[in-house]
Image 1 (tube, rainbow over the protein chains, first blue to last red):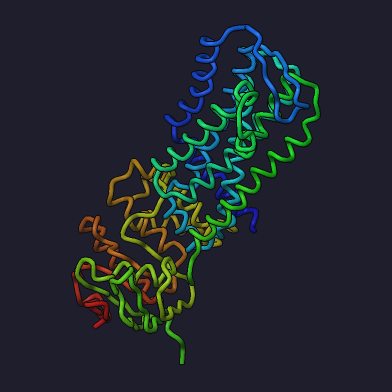
Image 2 (image 1 turned 45 degrees about the vertical axis):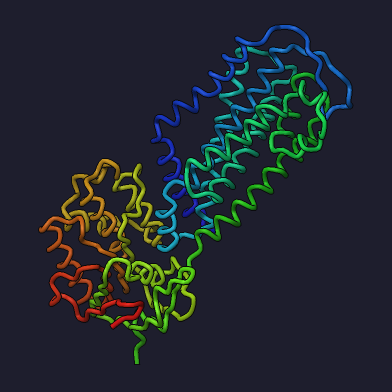
Length: 253
Length: 203
């Protein structure tokens, strides 16, 4: 792995992405739309929730605060997954030409990973700042960590989708379906409390990031377990994506 | 005896039951321009993709010695990067970015193909012909020993077409082996040899 090669590829990938003006505008708009919708449709009444990573106790929390947190995870996951998928799918042939000309596939994916981490940080920070306008969690730093882990896990899922499917429409579908079912529905702790087959909810990508954010917002519990599990989940997706990308970019000479 | 820069031995390729290439063998020597012609669907692009390593043959071998320059039929470039950024990116890929010599080579290519005024323009704002010039320039940038071109001049105007041949002949005189794949081979006299791909075989 040559650092100068990775640096050049990361700089070019970031420039290429930053010139997608409409995509950037939409990325800014998604959290704002999500938060505004939730703010308008929820009230300040107590609702019972149970956290999977907690001690099983039922807590009464403010409906609006809980919903904003829940939708914040969904927003950052969605943005991160879309960008990550686009990083892989855009100009796959041109990238393969770079491999023919001397780049290693591992250097190109390392460059994309560097850009992805930047996207994760910016997306999570922006969502967290927007969230701060509507709500004040008990431990704001932990909520930011939850958003970052969520963006990381779904960013890695986006990379995987980008390597598995060739066309944009299919990848949009694959991302929307999972984010909608997982981060946008099943990880809601109000739903979790009475859900059957809880194991299914616990194996989905947004589970650990959601637990980090909820624990930080409503308890003083330790975050170590969910953070480690979330990072391991994302890393596993990343390793599969890297292996598949390497196979797609392989040159037979 | 010096090995040819490009040697193809008994290459076969099928897509499901359809046999596209049947035992294709040929060599391209230093200082040669070899034309490969054939009807649409004859398997020319499949052969090219096997030559450069983008596709694995079912059997047979391809040996390339030295630097490879490759220009596909479709410009494989980045629509949202500028011409200058492409040269910087490919200078890194070719391992030329360590010193500033690549800038002079870039400027020389821009001048020869007459698109220097568009160096800071993004590819998606260039005309089709200028995109093709950039595409070809990136294949010539590192002065390859083996140059493989697929329909390289379809989008060129007449002046650029003539310039293309001037540069290709200069590269040939410098000792490169050049393979040009086309469904039509104009100016047959410019080629050292022309091989026709028919029924999956080279004749």
